[in-house]
Image (spheres, rainbow, N blue to C red):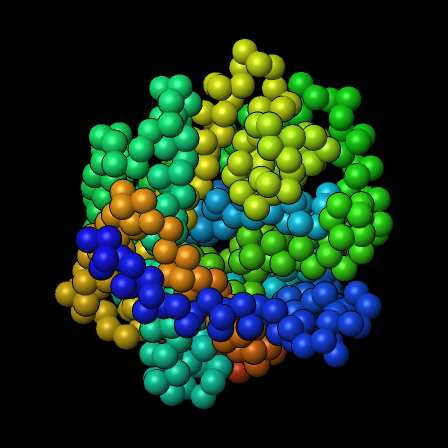
Length: 529
């Protein structure tokens, strides 16, 4: 079995160099890398930040919209006849966004770029909210009805924006399916990391991966995933509606407790973040570019604005206007980055374990292990008598982050697959492959004690491929979003007919059976949007 896994890992050996090249381009060329500040930024990050600024200006900073209006949208019709509610869509999107990267990714950004990386993460997220709005509105505009559900997302609006050729949507669908499914084994690994750490903490000993505990975890994980995934999108959203609030509330509550225990360190946190954003400590490179690059990259990769991944969740919602889902998913970016990621930042910066040792080891020896740095930070900030209990709670949160992301990945692969075929057998096949092939594969690699870095690199490669495919499509389709937004502002979110903005769609056309009901509303003052 180990030989088989190693053969798979060897087969993907060519992936890591390609992934690194694309993520680093053009910083891997000396002529560019020597440019002050700018030379620290790869093209993908400049692209994401650039379009975020562009969309913010063109939408008159839509991310500053009235929060009460978004809450009212999410409270409306919790059990629609077709599709899922706006709240369920928000929770499914947050299931993907609020993943292990909110902990290990942000810890990694601080470990490399220093506390100042958090400041630039906030800036990037602010502009990323506008990008999330744009791609989510496109997903709503071009969604399609399938029985009692809606399907849509990048393959659907990509096809329409790029001339209507079916091969375009098929290609985008296949790329997304590969992206989603190959992200499943790493999330499986993260679940094991969380539960394994809990088992070690409770037992007071380091358990081998071949121990009975790990086999029980593997069996329970596979059964749970198969049961939820095989029930379809509605069953998945039923579980994410429960698990996402639990993981978010538990993580935020415990983080707030730790912050309150260390209240005198809060001024230190803000000082280090602000000063470090413009004058990083020598330990973190001593240059603004490092903090800036790390904060922007990790922030955007955490909230996924611009990747097109969350468009699957945006498309399945039943809304009265396409722009409503744009508002909802923009809020998802805010909550993911400004709240959850910031909670991680508070703990890591206030602990500042880089000034001493971690478990008797020098900082340089442990900074590469992000989860080690995070858990060491937690233990540094809490009383000794409570350290184990709080560590267990944080590991539960980490495990839930990974588990809901895993569910989201397979569900989004299913939604995307609907573009290729809506055959019950084909969709069931996607569910089976995701839950009964890729999840067990990830579990078996853990039990075999393998890391398979080349296979994990494939998920990194697909992340940047999604960005490079989605952002140009959103740029090409931006005119339709601006027209839809103008309609929303003029009518106060009144009845929307796609022909009013010069396009015919499956669900928003005048003759669509599920056209939103006519409701007279007052025009909305652009200042509150």
